[in-house]
Length: 214
Image 1 (cartoon, rainbow, N blue to C red):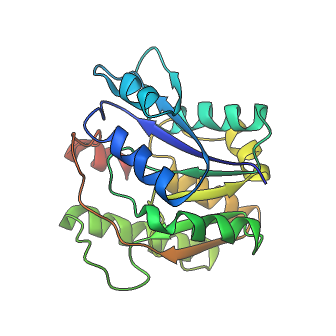
Image 2 (cartoon, rainbow, N blue to C red; image 1 turned 30 degrees about the vertical axis):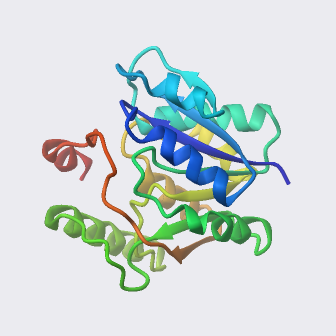
């Protein structure tokens, strides 16, 4: 099966190269970086490490960047797409495990979760409260427990890519897109992953952005 990693990146020149190199160490897979209107050398460094790079003319948000990535994946007939952050937080050692949930166990989406088992990751208090709120909301609406619904470390199959290309929010897409899958009876699972602190750069989500999220 054809597999692709999609990395939405905004001003991540300090980490994008190391993220791409780490992915290559763990799996022979196509890597696509969506440069979301960066004002630094993100696109240059990503290209230098061998990634395919699509540059957006202005910053439009993670969801908009991922839609561009999913369109590319569908156009080039990829079967499985994995979203990985550009800041070095995600546990790349679990990449193959995520993919196997899609290709071998036939789930529609597999989520890398920080909260299935105890890990060293400690989210800021406000973010931790928000994640739990979203988890409770998903449980109330869909009668399923998803412990890390805001995780951006996710693998999906081609059918979900087709859905997301036509129905995906530009900003804060994780929870609404998950809810959309569940209400339409797509299968979703989680696997435990370790999450590191941001390895460089600055989060695009401020305190006030997080309030708007909810």
